Image (cartoon, rainbow, N blue to C red; front, side, top):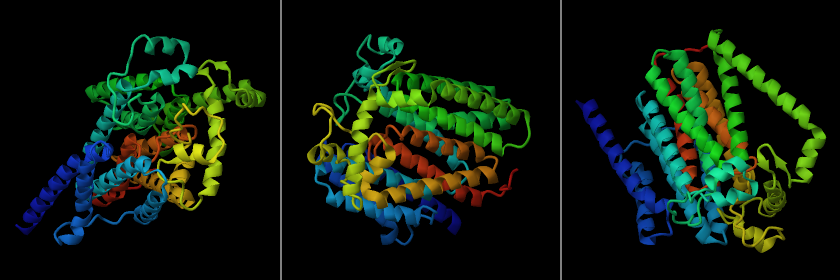
Length: 444
């Protein structure tokens, strides 16, 4: 009876937290739209975090391998918020990160039964598809005009694709941001497909649905014309196939994966050999060129912004410039050869951007989060066959997102960044699921 009562009370708490979170979400995603609502939302989020301290029956979040690193991350988050010279730019970033951290907390607290992971992953993919659709309908396709591929440019410019405008992005979302969102969940879809082919080959309807979603998402990625996205996805998919080939026992599927990887690797070597060192040097020194994947004019923009970002990191090494404030700090303190009509949204490198937002200590915390997340994914993939498709998909998503992030980024606190925290929460639950599972065995 006591067990049933405790379970009912726990479920009641979860429903209350979910309701508070959903009420707070729109106000924290768009904090400048209605400040009283934002203040109320912050109070609701505070209630979610502080309730375990105020009420003995409220369960505390379980200890995870990420706790200490997240403490350092949060300390730097507070410092970077206090030192910002542009609070109007910092406000939406800090509220979105707070929303992401709360989502992470809810995921690790709610994960007490095995069906949780498939359901939470399905919802993660669904929200990712939703972000992608919103991005496409609100995309500023004109922003890609200087570098578009002629065939795709003719298609996307035949009509106005911006159906509506979001608050804070009235001129439209850059298509590269849509590509960044896709990085987080498209490799996961492929991993689930491989896992189902390996574990459930007879469920053809499942395969048909998954293939349809993959095809639609891949077409969306193609139309973003984001070379960073294409590179990130290629790297993530290659890493995914390699991880599956390494971890599987000898089988026809494993042989097929190794053959596919060998062919892809050979094609890559031939391409690099044909371009040669002189070709890459010309590509960097004279970016105004036309290639099979479109114009490379945007390289010159990155050549202008990266030195400025590195200089700012050196000047604000311990605190960062403040969350989201680099777009103003770059023009305020440094000579930069970019038109004032152009908005410097971020540093076009995820690691530079984290260091700019939260200083070198914040970057160290971020890198530690990634290292721990990679370790958790690999351990889960090795120890549990049922978790393997999820764990390897999560890991490949991180790889794709950060390869994309070498030349572009979804900055900390950006609205789509909520998916990153969701992914991190799913990864954090893997050790808990391993402990709950009575079928955990080391697989060769």
